[in-house]
Length: 87
Image (cartoon, rainbow, N blue to C red; front, side, top):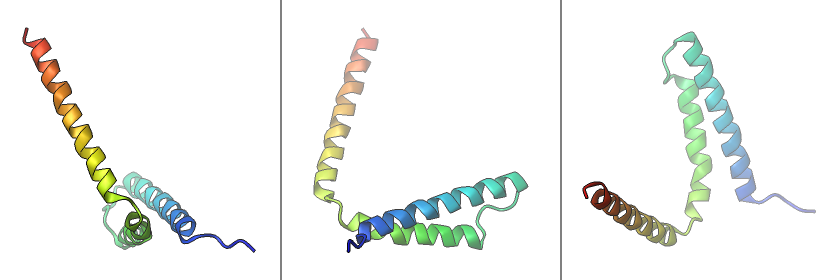
């Protein structure tokens, strides 16, 4: 028998909590009530708790290197755009 993995369960909980949070936010915005009540904070807590196992498995060094490469490329692009616009 195949048992679902921890990641699949966390993703399902993350999706359900995000949906519940979005629905509560829509309902509260329409009724013009305060945004941060107990239900919203509980949804946010569950959302963060279910995301923690997923965040622990990410390759952070590769993500940091990719982000720094993208930042350098963006700066080069902005520098080239500035030079072209000031000609």
